[in-house]
Length: 94
Image (cartoon, rainbow, N blue to C red; front, top):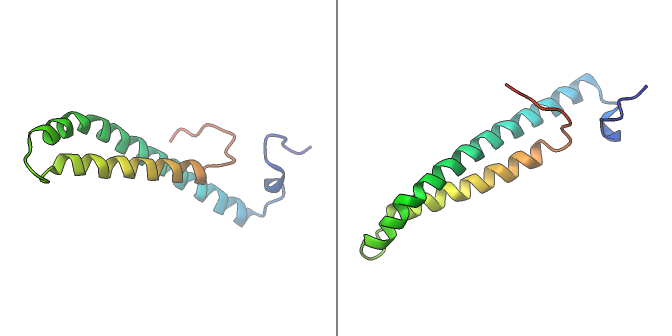
């Protein structure tokens, strides 16, 4: 009997295709971890970037730029990770 938890297109894969699918999902998990780490750093940087934006003269706001970069990286990694892990029906803990 077929595993009904698997999507229909994944029920009859060759071993090489299963390996490629697992690699894609592991890479997606890695991107999710990196994305959450960037999100944590970006959240912490908001304290310093707010102070930098308030007190630094002119366009010299390095912490604001660093906060924007980490925020953009977080969103990029999180969306890529979710896209790469699509179809995963189990919890992976490694």
